[in-house]
Length: 210
Image (cartoon, rainbow, N blue to C red):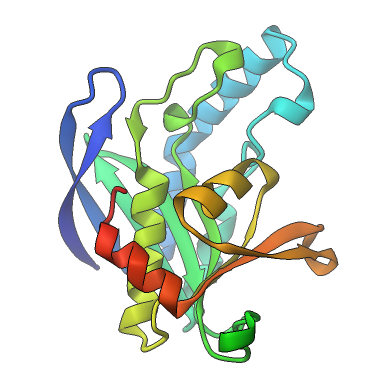
C-alpha cells in the first residue's frame, strides 16, 4: 500500500486538516471500513425513521456494506483507495480497469478506469432533514481525482466511467465535469457517465480538492 499526504477541510470551522490518501487497499481493509461505518449507518437510519423522512430522501448508499465488497479486491483489475483522517476511514473507492471501455464517440472502445463504488463515511453525509452537516468536505472530489490519476498512470489518458446514483448525478456532472451518456437498463437504470481524456486534463490541472 502506498500513500500521500493531502489536506481536507473540516466543515465546522473551515480549517484544513492533514489526511492520508492511500492506494492498494487489501480485502481486510474493506472489512475494517465496513465495521467502522456500520454503527453510524444504523444511527442515521434510526434518525431518519424517527424524523419520518420519506424513503426517497434517504442517502442512496445507506445500505452499502464494504465488507461485502472485500472479495472484489482479489481481482487483478480491482484497486482500492481510501482517505484516512483522525484515525478513521473518511472515504473509500473501488475501481476496475478491464470490465468497461469508453463509450464517448472520440474515445469509443478505448480502455478506462471504471469507478465501481465511491462513498464517504456516514458522518460526512449532509442530511438537512436530520440536521447533519457532515464533518469533512471534498472527499468525493479527492477520490474522483485519484481515479483520474490512476487512469493517467495506466496509460488511459485520464478516461473514467461510472454509473451514478441519482443523488450523485449533479456532483459528477457539475463538480467533476463528466458527460452523461444515458441510463443503463443493465445497471438498474442508473445514469452512465464518462470523463474524456480532454476533460481529465482540465480536471488534473485543478488539483485534488477543486
